Amino acid sequence: MIFENNLAFARQMDQQDPLRELRNEFLFPQQNGKPFIYLCGNSLGLQPKTAKHHIDEQLSNWHNLAVEGWFEGKSPWMFYHKRLKELIAPIVGANPQEVSPMNTLTVNLHLLMVSFYRPSGKRFKIIMEAGAFPSDQYAIESQVRYHGYDPKEAIIEVAPKAGEHTLRTADILAAIADQGDEIALVLFGGVNYFTGQWYDMPAITKAGHTAGAIVGFDLAHAAGNVPLQLHNWDVDFACWCSYKYQNSGPGGISAIFVHEKHFEDKAMNRFAGWWGYQEQERFKMAKGFVPEVGADGWQVSCTQVIPMSLYYASLRIFEKAGFIEPLREKSKKLTAYLFYVIDQVNKSLGEVQYQIITPATEADRGAQVSIVAKHNAKEVFNALMLNNILGDWREPNVIRLSPVPLYNSFEDVFITGEHLMKISKELV
Ligand SMILES: *Cc1c(COP(=O)(O)O)cnc(C)c1O
View 1 (cartoon, rainbow, N blue to C red):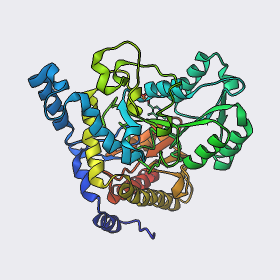
View 2 (view 1 turned 180 degrees about the vertical axis):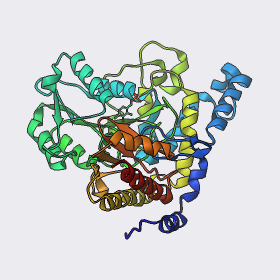
View 3 (view 1 turned 90 degrees about the vertical axis):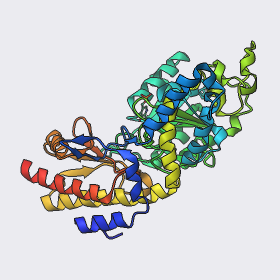
View 4 (view 1 turned 45 degrees about the vertical axis):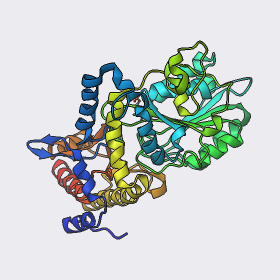
């Protein structure tokens, strides 16, 4: 696609965008009476306008029905999660039975590792990406210790080559082949939070299985961002938070995926709770845990209706968009346009002041563009903020900008480039 660095072009792209009306579904933060250009959906998605309605509905149910709300009303709380499962499944490429909203992300990572990290004999290692999100590092280390192993021996981190920022698929696959029958689990991110690199998930899954290992993914930065086919790729398990690209609000509910091939595995460990018990028999309050079939069998506590109602508000917008494929089509163009605009800024400055560390190949990235600013990084970031452009800052000098197809426009991207150019010229 041939891009142009001017407002008329950006507006024409917006005119041709079939999803352009969706931004009206969201509330934008403001500064001095003007909405921000919000490029931080990788960290916390915007609030759907309908969020209040969906919470209010549950507050009314609570008011009017109180405890009867579990079984009475238009949408009894007992089954509330089922309406979410139907809408979550197409976003991650799963059957509704394979997904379930529950808890928060790191908690789910622990619960799933209880089931899927089963070290025995010489097969006890975990392969992961170097520089994974800290919560994942801590969760994995503590799980390894819990099983009595030394994280230094049990955790194999795949790192970029010297001087590079992102991983080469060949290096990931080689590390898996190399450790072979010593690997119990391959546990990777889908999209890396720092670089925005989208890993080759089908290839990693296949290599992990060839080595005889279980393969799981943390999809915090991938779910709702890039198209996933968890079922067809034969991924064993996954989990994600919904407050980033899926706009469910701060501390929003997480969701899990468990491949249906594991549903019959009776020997699998779980940390069980009453809500994972067979739904039909749950209120018999019998002794001896019998899990519900499917991902719901991993539920521990009763349905978190209020946070789920927020996730539901956002999922309805995904449904309106036609789920992930139309969003991905727009996202590819938006992100490519941001690459182009940043390149134009560098050209105009006569040097690479903004080095993009996110992969240049479309298939290896989602919406996020991570930029290393050579000079005055923090000042540039602050000046963007003063100009109503809200990105995301990572020490020591990385600015992450994520044009989200649900609510960002080509005009947003163009204006960001204009300000970046102006700010850089003033600062240098
Ligand atoms: C955002 C993120 C988290 C956050 O975990 P919470 O338990 O929701 O606080 C964890 N892991 C990854 C990879 C993330 O990107």
